[in-house]
Length: 359
Ligand SMILES: Cc1cc2nc3c(=O)[nH]c(=O)nc-3n(C[C@H](O)[C@H](O)[C@H](O)COP(=O)(O)OP(=O)(O)OC[C@H]3O[C@@H](n4cnc5c(N)ncnc54)[C@H](O)[C@@H]3O)c2cc1C
Ligand code: SF4
Ligand code: SF4
Ligand code: SF4
Image 1 (spheres, protein in one colour):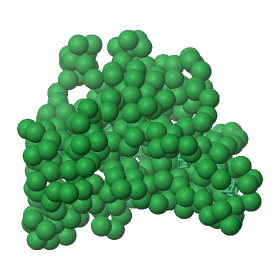
Image 2 (cartoon, rainbow, N blue to C red):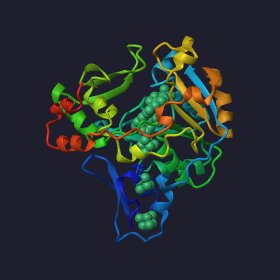
Image 3 (cartoon, protein in one colour):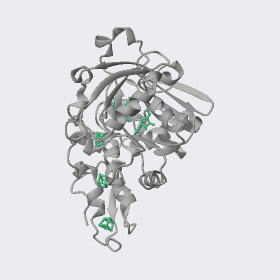
Image 4 (cartoon, rainbow, N blue to C red):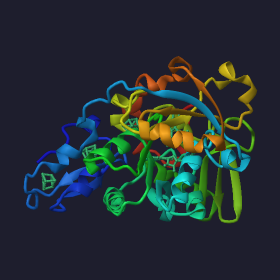
């Protein structure tokens, strides 16, 4: 039983693991450090559920009646604690006030990135901010379904392939689900992230406890990153940082990201959120280097929630062409030297990797 044919056809959402009634699917890491499903043929009953849940095989979302906004949380603390304008926190607070749960990406032991649940403002702090690493969703689909069946509010925020996988896993409509997906450049390898964390821990002789990919202290749209090892904090530019350079030069993205079908304005989620690129052209008065969110509202439930929360935001409505950026039009191109990069990556010590990516 093959769930996917080639690597480009698996985004690693892990929904096939959660849905398998026989427990026959597990995720196994490949040589690039990405996880792919592997089926235990002796346990598989050929029920076909794993194929049906796969978001890569789903029909593309039809063009809908979208609304387009630029938004900043009015409260500076909320905006500065998010990677763009803080819309994720505003939507999440609405759900928490209804007694519901928010699911987003946070750090677990050894800085592994995985989705987790937040039921209050303290837990929400743990899942704020962009992590440029593929997040693990093991067990999350099952938990969300359980909470929705108990008639609780749930907000899920993740990459568009994860959001589509959740929709297919649930296979039904839930009034209290708010589905939020991201404008998505692509996800880097969890294996390279692990190597990078170990490299830094060795270099600075301590345990890493936090890494902020979009630190706003320099009012530079979050183009600074910072990390904590032991009691010391370190900062870097995302253009100089080895891991970010490997990411933005497209060497360490998941193969499926280079042919991603979700790099479009049309989605099946309620909201798509991202950075408002070019806000200085449309609303120069709002550009201060501290981030503005782009918000696309796709559905009627999304429009109702937007009306509930918009008082918490400084916002403006705009046209489709105002919000377009490359990742809403086409997938990120594969680096020309990707194959050679990986050949060398496996042979070289980590400290030499920076040289492969240039300056
Ligand atoms: C891998 C990745 C690539 C992105 N590429 C683009 C891009 O090309 N263009 C663009 O405009 N915006 C992109 N974004 C989105 C942008 O960086 C912000 O995350 C988004 O605008 C939300 O910002 P915020 O201030 O509202 O909230 P934040 O507090 O920054 O949002 C946090 C939430 O984002 C989600 N998230 C964070 N990391 C991950 C992850 N690794 N996997 C799944 N979900 C995650 C989680 O649910 C998390 O709780 C990307 C995000 C990620 C994670
Ligand atoms: S076909 Fe059914 S039993 Fe077999 S791996 Fe897929 S979901 Fe599991
Ligand atoms: S369901 Fe997700 S993890 Fe499983 S094959 Fe499809 S894309 Fe890959
Ligand atoms: S680029 Fe596409 S396939 Fe890759 S993580 Fe984003 S949505 Fe998923």
